[in-house]
Image (cartoon, rainbow, N blue to C red):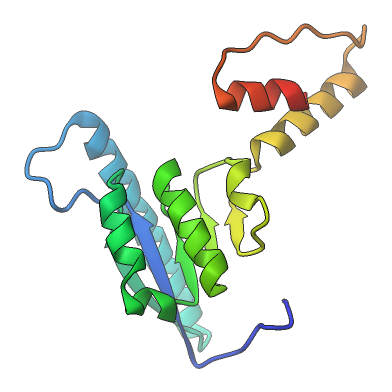
Length: 171
C-alpha cells in the first residue's frame, strides 16, 4: 500500500473489455474475443460476490473497448472515469497506452490482464501487468538456460518485430 491508499465503504472498478456489443455481425476472431470478455467478467463478478460476503463492496462499470481509439478517447473524457478506483483493461495495445496515460494523470490504478507490454510500465507507477513483461520473461529464460544447459552459448534468431527485438536484446 502506498501513502495515498485510502479505505472506503465501496470501490468503483472500470472493466474495459472487448464485448463487441455494437456489432450485429461479428467474425470468428471477434466472437472469440467477446467470449473471452464474457468469461472474464463472470470471473470478476464471482470475485465481487466473494468480497461482498466479506463486507467489501465493489461497483463494476463495464465498457466495451475494442480497437477503436476514437471510442477510448471519448471515454477518457467522461468525468465518471475519474471517479474510478481501479481500471481493469483494456486488452489491446493502442487503447492500453491511452488508458495508462490517463491512469498516471489521474492517479488511478490500471491492471492489464493480458498484455506483457513493458512500454505500459515505463515511468508509470499506476499500471500493473498480470502477465510477466517481455523483459522479465526473457531474463528468466536466460537464467534458466544458463543454470541448466551446457555449453552456455546461444544463438538467438528473431524477426524485426518490436516484441522479438525486445526479447532477443534482453535475452
